[in-house]
Amino acid sequence: MKVDTGKKQRAVLLLVSFILVVLIAAPGHAGQFKVTRVYDGDTVKVEGHDVETKVRLVGIDAPEASRKKREPGQPFSQQATKHLARLVLNKVVDVKGYGIDRYGRILGVISLEGKNINLEVVRAGLAEVYRGKPPYGFDSSPFQQAEEEARQAMRGMWAQGGKYVSPREWRKLETREMDERQ
Image 1 (cartoon, rainbow, N blue to C red):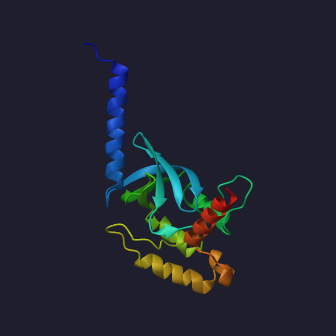
Image 2 (image 1 turned 45 degrees about the vertical axis):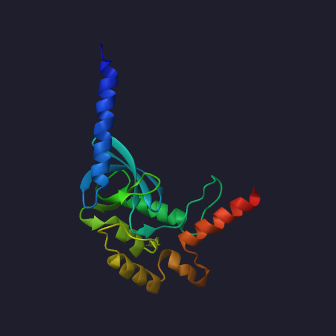
Image 3 (image 1 turned 90 degrees about the vertical axis):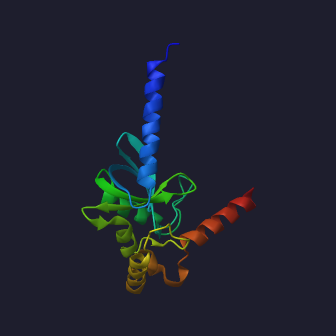
């Protein structure tokens, strides 16, 4: 029986890619990747080690980008996306994994030259601390302190004062509106 060499190579590459993604997502594991796309203020695409994957910045929740092309999305969503892009787009970063979310994205801390990018987005007032259960081994206390400082200084989205709506609440409202339109 003759084995198709191309199929065998693809199978091996797929297996190696899968193992690499699982290792990167394992708590505490880090790898270097180039950020090739910024989707929004808390999600990027990275490439490296013959793997391309999405990373959801763990511990933060940035304002929601619009799901429709010609709509602005949540206030400060565009600023959050642009800020993250200025920090990491087309740069080689370290990704420390904390697992995989329900959408198959690596939950990770992105660092550049020793600086925690997730934390920098919160400090800029362009993301809040994620309100759900943190993954095993993730310490959210520096993020909570950074959020409080950004709130006090009225930086970024915190300048909205009483008009501020959390990304979590925004998603609920958007889902409700979409359901009502159908």
